[in-house]
Picture 1 (cartoon, rainbow, N blue to C red):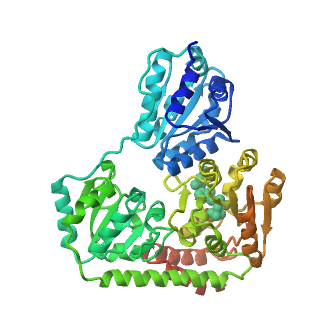
Picture 2 (cartoon, rainbow, N blue to C red):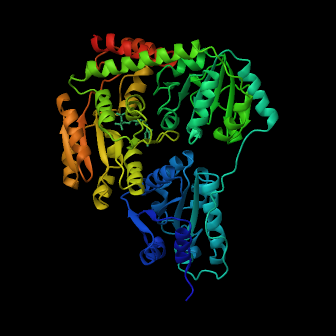
Picture 3 (tube, protein in one colour):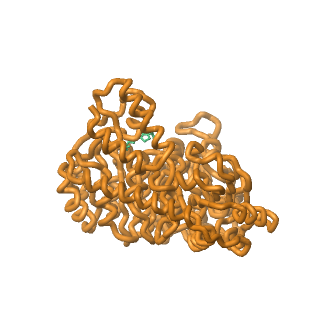
Length: 576
Ligand SMILES: Cc1ncc(C[n+]2csc(CCOP(=O)(O)OP(=O)(O)O)c2C)c(N)n1
């Protein structure tokens, strides 16, 4: 008996190694979900909002490096996927979205639930096609999978429900994506130019992004030869921070340590596999070279003297024999010393505020760092949680970090944690959630219970949209629209069936985190934290606010975190 298009879809996905699809059912998707039910080889991961399905698939794909799939029904169902798909696409996570569509005979008539997904998803995908005939389907699916894995990002197949139920064609095409990984390195002349640049420089700093995944050995070998301090972005942290005696921390608003200084004080800055977007933090005086496998990114963030197309690992492998070893390590030592000072101050700050009420979020994050397992997967919400994760949670070897680092969407952490836990049922998965972020996709607490996913949520319950509050302060604006009237989130989580505890006293932080991490099932710790961390006093005048904010901005933008920490400790807590 011939199979139908939906059955062919599922068979091709199974052949491609896909074992689950995240989504919400709907009429137009029925042939697909029914094919999943009958296949036995694919799990249907039912979420409560399609946006969460896309975030979860993105996290799954980012962690495993393999194709992950999400699906939504026609019109609003697949439209809800869009924010999570933007996130996955910008994270270069290979995700296939199945956007079920209205009956093909109705397209263009303003039919019930009609949208045009092939237009809507174009901006957040490498490949986005409408299937209007069964014979077209196998080639479209093959192309979609191949685009997602080879160009790394999102593909969308728009599939009308009636077409999904039609007989599939008998002819076949290649039935699985080919994750063909080429060696990509610059031509010899380009390599020689880069070697000349670093050989002629007295001091060199490396700044590493997520393109350094799998290249830690090469980066360290280069740092050793050049006596170069190594800074990194948040996405680079997990690859570059562990066991790295050249590491000098992160730059940017989340930053800490000596990375900013090292990047500004060197003769040559090497940008490795990073598309770090904040040009305010990038220097102008050193000579700058950039290596990226996507050549279209070269030079779009900073001035550039040498721009090379290549994979970081392959390129450094080819470059190393041309690099003359440096013997002067005074610059490296100075940056490492500066970094250690900043790290000591971070620690001292945590000890200083650890016993204070309201609870300081830094103390919560630092305690979590101590207690979490060495191979935990952390998902950090966009907002202040990203700052706490960047500064206080160490990237031990084997730990992974998920965030909406390029798209910057709120509410990413919990659904990403869902994808992580589905992909790795036996690993500890921790969501650092903001109260604004958690509330935005709070229905996903039900997903944890429904699938018995033992995700641990540490909720930074500061009763405000904290990062925006801070941004308003920095702009010299009074707070407006940030305050959150929250429920007792522990009680909400308990009602959903999670283990939960509310923490209002600093002394409860450690035991509550210990208890939560030891739980077998999903658990939430609702930590009521200080809303005024790095924030202005509510009664300050606009002039005070502006003055403080300007001072803070100058320091955040112009120097290392230890200066900011000093100011916060000496001025802010005693601010009138
Ligand atoms: C979907 C979305 N809406 C709005 C924003 C703007 N925004 C960025 S951070 C933030 C506040 C986040 O608040 P919360 O989750 O409570 O975390 P906090 O910063 O207080 O730790 C907002 C509103 C955004 N980035 N994404």
